[in-house]
Length: 214
Image (spheres, rainbow, N blue to C red):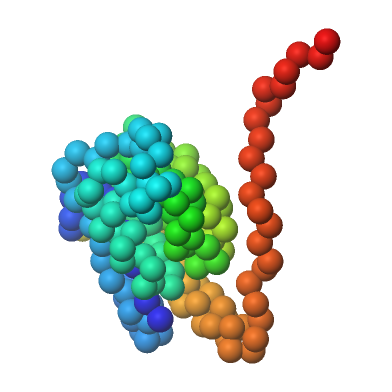
């Protein structure tokens, strides 16, 4: 089994990486591979709603989004990490997530469905709960079992050394790694026992605009 740790910070080895690494270390103790994926620090455009991916199964902008989607099919779980910028997840990470999950859903890839996922955020001081909620919405949309820890998945500090001194935050990451391992093993045991994934219905998409009644 393999988990992909997605670093949504413009700093490859910064605070977000430090948090993800702590969770990854626990996964490795459980004999589960934990690989790193950095979205990079080059500008990432958001989704422009062009619909190109629906026909081609890939995003029109050929950058780390497509690279990640190519890798995702081979992984059993995901932990998405991002720093907090102005009480929100970093803009580049939101652009990345928008496009990844749009392609996955509307191009019919479904590379995340029923695979455990978790979100992790890092901040100097505040904005963590808002950013965590923001990232969790992607997981919920894709029918991913959301893995929790014993508190909200966050660390605090301005530098990686600060984060390592956040004893509660580091414990949260360790518990998260162990909980992810347990979830993966539980799902695998269910699969071996013949338990099937839930039956899927055809998608119903509605809006609130209705013609006027005459």
